[in-house]
Length: 392
Image (tube, rainbow, N blue to C red; front, side, top):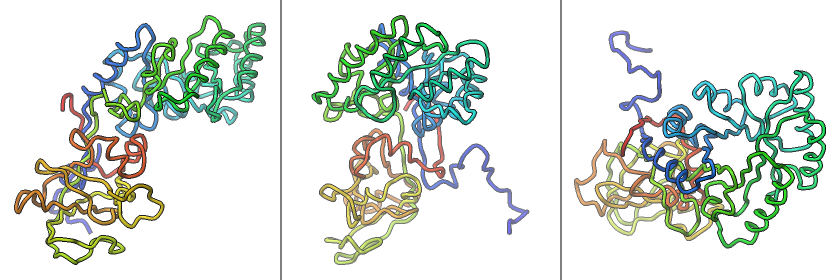
């Protein structure tokens, strides 16, 4: 039962600092700098921004507002609900919905909020044509043509047939032709060139409308891939666009975990669930209040986790000027780090260990967990104290 004599910390607006076991710092100026750098690189193509999945886990509202202030005028979201939320923040922006959910009435909300659906199949085209017909005028849409990913989109033959038919009927108003690269983060992959050539042929059937092929990695494949509009996502948020190449983007997100206990264990003792780690030396252990419930994946343990690939090295954190390894299995709410090499007394209860950020690169942390930066960001849990800064 609450004690009426003690004033509680208000919970509105996120997790208060003093109650949080982990914190997330988002450098909004770095986000804007990344967008401006890509926009400069891609001119004369327009540079949009992909802000789906709550701005890649960093918060749709602050992310969208900063990108708007930086000059971004076109956005991509995944679902109609995301589009409606974004419209409230960006009343004058162009907003494309990648997975528009047509057929169950979503078309009414899409039209009412001025969103542009990306039509991924002939059935979606039919629904949108019918909806436009019932309202007496064609409404804008994007046409997604599949050039080799086999996920969403019309086949090239279907796209060609639609272009010929719509030129006569003008039942709907395509304003963008788009496709998606499957292997852009591997520059030497032959599918990249095949997709680019296939998209060029499709674009020839849709004269007079914008074209878009390149995602973050596609931007770095060169001018041939940029067409009229590029759609960066992970690069905006500091992720490495191209595998095996230096990351030109500024880090945007820093995740940290609060140390809640320092404990001492002897050589020969075991650590965490499953006793998968036996200590080889007397060890200083920092127990931190973050775990897989916070999106710090169990696979980052690097020890005794079934289905994990790799050599089992596991993830590391950063504290007191040193990189420190995860020790034993990551648990739901607590992760252990070996801070012995920091020295006696260098790390204490209440200090913060960086999980990823300027010292532990986002992609490095993701690889240690056997995953990718996209998943690490979008898995961030609700228990973080979030703060947004204009400069790191």
